[in-house]
Length: 490
Image (cartoon, rainbow, N blue to C red; front, side, top):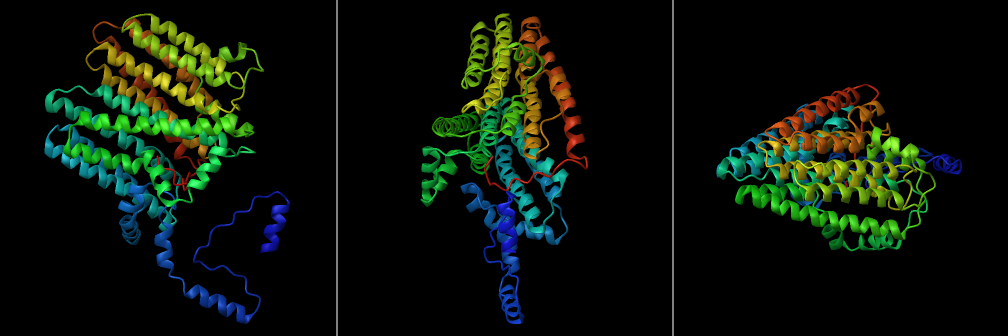
């Protein structure tokens, strides 16, 4: 067996060598060796191994020490009663939606119940993956459910808090809820884009990465750094406790501050790594970043006309300037002005320039998150400045629909099948097209409820289009099952 593995290595074929731990694997050559191997196998407590292997080897502090010690036994209980991971995933979603409904009541008992149910939903969220690993029940549908339900649960809970605040004392915090969703989604895009740009790069070393590796040998720094990024376990625990004992406004303030600090920490570290490493990024990575960019017809038209062979830093610079222009112009001009439309057109041009050349530069992974910040931020600013009844909830729905499309793109890329069909991306306008449409709607329909109606209609059309295609893909027999065993907290 070892000779076969060595021959495969010599031929350039990657060989997977799993960590056996306490398990035993042997090819006995005679009767005595066979008896010794059998005795070694018999000494292994297989049930204990299954329980331990059901838990991810890398996870957040709260999940590792406050949930996994008992959720693995819930997973075993579910397995012995014939429950499937998909059923547990669905139960987690239903529990989170009930939590959101409790928060929407605007009462203190409702807020306390919401916090308790949110923690229960997270326990079930951990249990479904542990059940899949314990019982080896993987499915394509399960991959789709697991990839989307976490975000649906969290963002539905944000909406419940906003509704509860309005019902409790008339506090309008939809802008905070939408801001939290925008910030959280942009954080995830930073994670996805950086990982896609670097996971198969060659010569992928840097002093910063080496320092991080050395810090991993110091136990307390590992957990501190995992907690700083406010992963899903810590984040949901904080939201649950603050919901139960404070107000929705305080909850969102804490969430925004925590996520902003986490975003600055992770993004700064990754920028530093990218500037200090000498990596050659592959064509596959460039293609993945281009798919994450979600460019529509306007950007494609500009990209075809722009000259080639530009600076390796032009892509992130163009994206950053375009993002700053559309956000600043929209914020300064005020609702109903045509200035944001001009800024959106300029943004579309600069977005096309950013994707003219393959995204293989050291900081090109910043392009997709900058595009997300521009599109989501423009919608948030326009809705917040409009002071039109219902505009912010409608904007929340629109950003949720677009964010679903972007998460769907990420998990398809992870599964190795590429982005959604280009016809869908073109049909829904791309990030730059949607930005132009929303700013134009604000300028044309700024009176009465026109802008709210436009946002609602756009959200409904986009949600219908992306959900139909997404469901068709994930439940089809050819769609891959995506299992995230990296333990990277979301």
